Image 1: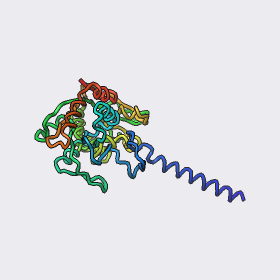
Image 2 (image 1 turned 120 degrees about the vertical axis):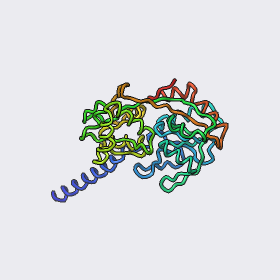
Image 3 (image 1 turned 135 degrees about the horizontal axis):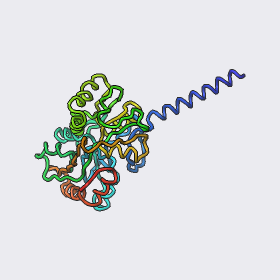
Image 4 (image 1 turned 90 degrees about the vertical axis):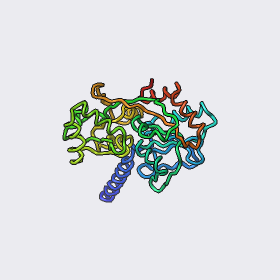
Length: 306
């Protein structure tokens, strides 16, 4: 009897442990924003969560393609815009890497999983260097927010990462945006040169890529926090707002400041598309982005404004 009882208890314990383990596997998965209300709320962590598509894709009155690292601002930003312009209630936004969005604009479509999207944007936002490469697509451009770099590390900073030079250490696993997809990648490389010259850049972007202690991301604003949270990477250079946001939502990460002498800044620029399907909505949103209300939202999430 004792043997049977012991077996049952052991089996139950293993079941509970297994269930807990599986539940924990995706405990930090996005979406980290608040999904819109619907009759059927169906989000499955690790399988179906689609964190970088927002709002109403059916018959939208405004479509905005945001450089992805602004995802944390979307809820407040769209709520404030709808309040200021109640005539626009169906809004669709994407927050993918700016290079991917640019390819989507130029190619006319994107496929995510089994879904093909052919919707055209009214407004595109990205870093200044990216929008400067695409002047023929816009009728109007304007800067509206600014950012700087910081380091994101695991809570407690177990590898004692204090600055960019520490990312060159062999034992520090780095999550780094692939410069091919992400504008931030090339800017971070500039910061590496500032902090440790070409040798530091080569160590992180060549030697450590080859030995897999630097992981190159495709969606840095999603993959990097998750790699830190799931102990797949130890440290990552990110925009300050991204490291700040993870702390705001209570995830076990920490922010390490990068001194101004080694840092770089980003200027976010919005472009009104020449072929905007909703031209008046595009103009209204462009005006809204430089309003006090929008600037307050960006500051709330760690960006700076002028």
